[in-house]
Image (cartoon, rainbow, N blue to C red; front, side, top):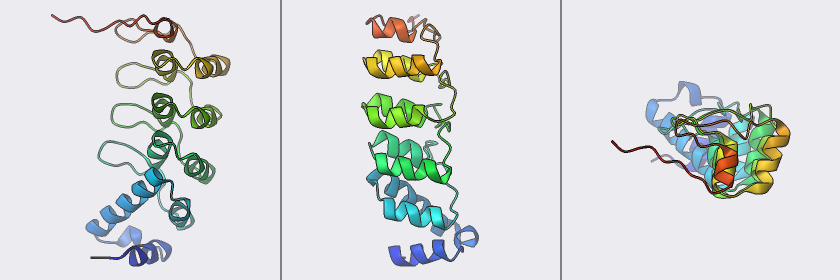
Length: 176
């Protein structure tokens, strides 16, 4: 079993790219775990070593998506400043912004709104960040999204829009 120190040395020495597959998997696990926990020192080790910041896990989550979802504002900031892609989508098409809104991480969501992502970016179900803000009654974020240019009347496949969701109107898929 490799220790954290030996893995850190592998990263720092730049051998991670040539490492065997199980070592690469261990490094990814440490990276994603550091993002979840907000371990900025460990994230900085990855960043300084040139580790691929946008690597995804089996669900398509990036470290930035995980940090935003788990409310790790300082980790979000470090990852963004280092060049992590704020527009990256997981396998369901959800972004870090959508995760932050879902979890009620208003400060993190506002920081992510300051990036160059399209405010109307859609997930696999055709939902936007504004629809999440409407559904979860995050009125302040809905206003911020509107100011950024989000279309509050854009609809998903069921006809839900951010404006309707904010009013408590939820349209569900019809059962056959």
